[in-house]
Structure formats: C-alpha cells, structure tokens
Image 1 (cartoon, helix red, strand yellow):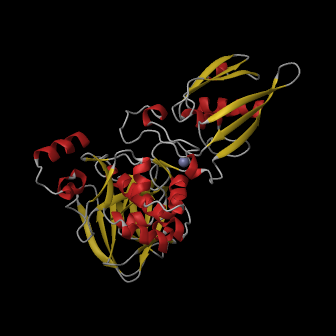
Image 2 (tube, helix red, strand yellow):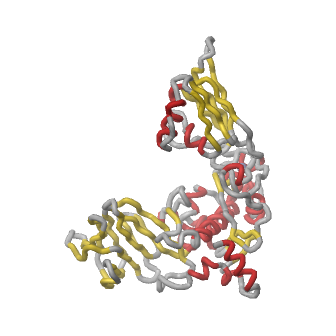
Image 3 (tube, helix red, strand yellow):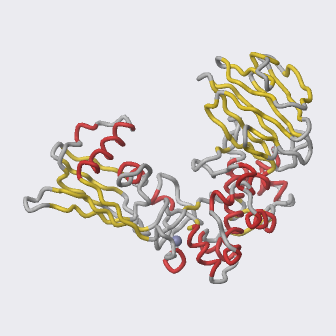
Length: 415
Ligand SMILES: [Zn+2]
C-alpha cells in the first residue's frame, strides 16, 4: 500500500498532501457524523458482556445474518452479551431486546461520550461476536481524540519543562496511528489498545498537559520523502539507539538508524540495570520459553555450562546468545532473547538486549548464578522516550527531538 501511495503521489503532484495520503483519502466515507479522520481501536477482547450508557439517549444499530436489522434510540443503558457465537442485546434488567446478532453499533449524540461499564470513551462502539462465546469491541473515533487517550499511558506523567517531549510523543503516536489505518483492510480494526500497538485507555488517560500537546501538534505527522514513517519508539535506549534491521528481521529504513543518546536518557532508572538468577531459575526461563514456542526442550539440561554472546549491533545490543547445558546447546536471536531470559523473580521480559552476562562459578567450576548487567529498556529502535524528555528539559524543541531520533524525517501537517 505504501508503494502504491508513492505512485499516487508521483502521478498527482498537484494534489495537496492531505488528499494524496491513501489511508486518509479512503476514510472520507462511512461513520456519518464522526469527525474525520477516524481510527478503529480494538478495546475489549474476549469479554462476555458489557453495559453501555450515555448522558441522554444514544443510537443502537443492529445487524443479523443478512443485513441491518434495526436502528433506534435508547435513553436507558443496554447490555451487549455474547451468546454462542452471536450477540444478544438486553436491557439493564436483563430482559432480552434482540438476539442472534452479528454486529451491534452504539452511537452517542454529537459531543457526547459513551460509558462502557465504568470507562468513558469518545466516538462510536462496534461489537463483533467471537466463536469462543465472547466478543471484541472496536472504538471508532477521531484520531485526535484517540491521541489524547494515548499520550499519558505512553509517556507517563510529565511536567511543564518536559512539554516538548510530550509534543514529540504526540507526533510519533499520531504517525504510528495513521500508518496502521491502511495496513489491515480486511480487519474490523486498525490497532489494539495495549503495548502490541499503543496503550489507549479512553478518556481516563487524558490530562491537561497531554491534551495541550495533542492540540499544539494537531494533524502533524512524520514523513520521509513522500511516505509516512514507521515511528517506532521505546522507553530508554541506554546510550545508543539502533538500526532497525539489526534488532528485528525487518528491512532497513533510512530514518531508523542508530544515534548516540547517552547525554539525554542517563537519568532514566533503566539506563542501567541488573538481573541476578540462580542457575535453575535461569534454565527454567529458557525451558519455558522454548516450550511455549513449541520448540525442542531436550537440549536444556539441569546444568549451565557456558553462555556465549555473538556480534553486537552498532548500538551494543546482542544479536544472538548461545547457551550450552549438560544436554546440548541452543541459540536465541535478537529480540527473542528478552522473552526467553525474562526477569529474576518477577514476570515480564528482560529490559533490553544490551547487556553483558557473567556466570558465577563455584570452586569446582559449576555455575551457581547468572548475573546480567544491562542498559536501556525497550527494543532500541526510533525515539528514546526518556531521551526525548531529557532533551526537552535542556531546551530542545519537539522538532529537534524528533529529527534527532528519526534521521532525515520531516514534520508535515496533514490538516
Ligand atoms: Zn536514550
């Protein structure tokens, strides 16, 4: 699609940027009354029922196997409930209103908000049944409203001297959102509301400073030549960001190349860190990871003999680690290392792959403990959020912050 976009841009040079962006252009239809450009965010997945209410009345539209079944206004809450691969609609007392539905859409009046259980949202909600006797819901809303619910969960509580970093985050998150809108044409949603894409909590996530940052950068995205960029970002690079192709099995991008950053993110509590595992805990982590990935755990014995790290990326991240036990050797690669090693005594993935590993041996040479000393938190590609905050504190603008992390990218205002 992005190659197609380039072709369109080249053949219609006189079109303004906002018209030539395919995802944006395609989104000129549908969802009457919803301010464009909009985005579809999967918010619930696997729920069995949810109560929807609003201040005043809201519109309910339902679809059965063939077509739209009904459309009406409700002044009282309704309950969407999963029912053996379909959806049922109930009133708040549990009386059945409609059954065997394949889709339910709830639309609040203009400027109004919807409440799902105890959470408030802008925009429209769609509900789709799953075969597993549950459903997923999709919040369709204006991209600027979406962004206001993303910024605080993604960059945390920030102060006025860090405002430029919040603006940089707004432009990066908006760009990320836009690029998803033409990525999955066959799906009912563009992105999900957790770390798989960007964390989005609806209106609960909004703050004054983040709302101001969204407004100050309204419509602004990052582009390289005529394409939106893949605006990846992460918590703390730990000294240097990395070339994307060295971290993931993805192609190189001219704007996702490593940059030096230790002056800016050194303040982060994850600039450096330690993990200390007993040998058995360490081997358990590796065994569990390989088992979950349906791999062969036969080579993970009870004793760790050696841990050898191979080449490093230009930013210092390990590309592969070979673990030798009394039963054989396994090799883990790139970002998979973080999932396999995990953390000592708590759930979650290892903060980064930028580390050195030391095996503490007893007098007989038997490995008793595994000591990992590392730097940074996250994949290390694109903007370092703690570095962006550090730059803002010493007076850099959001434009300077973004071009520091996204080499050669430009900020363009789409609307
Ligand atoms: Zn950094």
